Image (cartoon, rainbow, N blue to C red; front, side):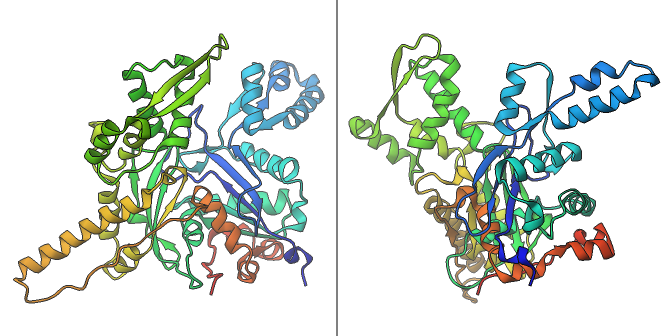
Length: 440
């Protein structure tokens, strides 16, 4: 028996991005890392690397006689780097470090930086020997097969891992949404992160790539909208602290309402009950300040259901996008997709978000059924379509948690590509990863 299969697998979700998502300076995607069997990741770190290139810059103009000095400088540059929050801090305090975001638009663009990032994740954060653990890594849908080959080369050659499985993050989010003992690998993943939002349909464990929908509104926009509402009302918040206050207000006090007009009336009739007070300290002077939190508590999340209140550029509600996504999928999968709509990402954690989503989608579907019956003059009675939105407490880390669940099953080890297979057949084995069902 392979001793590495008796140890928990390492699960690394290197930013649940998609081909359409952006990772711009100041808003990197985040990597979640930990061990299979845990409920939450051990560490969450921005996917960014800071490299000290001053050694190489000092010797680039030298002659061939100084080749040895340049080689030593290269070795020093390879050793002197930081990742995550430490990298961002080094870049702010020192000009000799250059920031590099290895994941751009949901894809790995800089493989050297990504290798360094994985190195720090394994040795400095998780503090484990990669030769003793199987690894589960994530990728976005529509990732090129060549990218999986590069990943396999790094993991097998550099880290000498005994086994590797590369999973599509939306499939893992489905696994995180299991509510029964039955394994359900067909559903729609609604992933609302801080920087990107997508609707991804999955049938029998395979992503329906042609039906993926991208949404230009994400968690960051909710924060901006809350900030804008408080600023327009003239709340006494220091300008340099306004975005951070808006983010905390969003996370701590925002909720989803069932009817926006009724919610306005509730706040107007009982302001003492619904209006909250925020207290803070000015960063520059240290003086205390306070402000009221009112309508933005429910108006923030409302931009997913009525986006026109935030921007005139995009006015399609999220439930309509989900319905269009399912309607564009193969007809024989649609009922199963409506039945298993799984929420993923921190921006789906607002109170009653799943109830509002389920109600709005059901209204759209029922209206379509009634319309079709009216056209047929009631000659054929259509069967009702079951709509179910799955919500669970761990959906903030749904992709990582799904990986943790599946990597805890015996089927995972049987589905992994092994070091022996890599040595015999090469990196091409990583181009495909079999879909397995690890729950019964």
